[in-house]
Image (tube, rainbow, N blue to C red):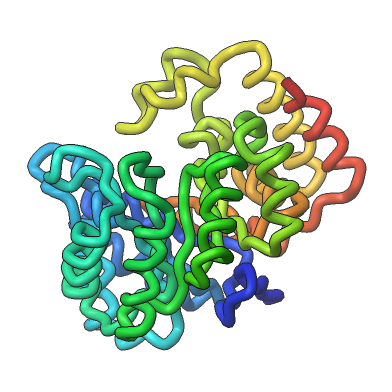
Length: 316
């Protein structure tokens, strides 16, 4: 399996990242362990989570996903086979987004404890915090790297202007730069990444791990009418895609998937993997059947005609 280097780091990952937002929410610990074992056995290696996952679920307070991953790492002994990605900055009880050095110092220790590991491979600023300068945040990350708690840093949800400002601050103050960006990106949601942000990332050799690869499940094809939205706990979030353009994209996915004997989800992820500037998409699964479909996307090679068909159908 061809691996892709993340930015200018020494991290190389397979072209699909497991989204750990489901752990402790729609996948319990036993199911999560089985999914992670199969994921690694298939030759995949990067697991994405955040300290806030899954605080939104009833009865949760945040940290549930990291805790499950940590328990799995301890039980499986597979720490050296995976790249652990987690994030800091979301509201986990402090009342607002925070990338202050004080918050980061406390949050990283809590994440390391939950993950039951000595070092986080890739630590991301989850959201921009306009109350803190990039230099302050990156300075905190430099101290974490020097202490051996974090290997590399990146960011999520920054626009082109914010990303450029962060890179400029790193260069000016001789601080570690964001080596990876996590934007939302899929066949339907193209505008956030394509354009100035993608151009910047490609020019500066920034790794890009995109999230919402299946548009909250819509591009799997399981939501084709309002009646379908009750099929899963996340169904209501897919309602925004049920429109003329969304159905046009599903029709193109059906056409291409039939040609390859693949699923719409596999085609949707293979399209992202083939896009310029993308290192890997993130995708989640809550069952082994779903995971097998995701794994199949890695070996699916779309022809130029397939890419054109999908591009045409998904152009806003």
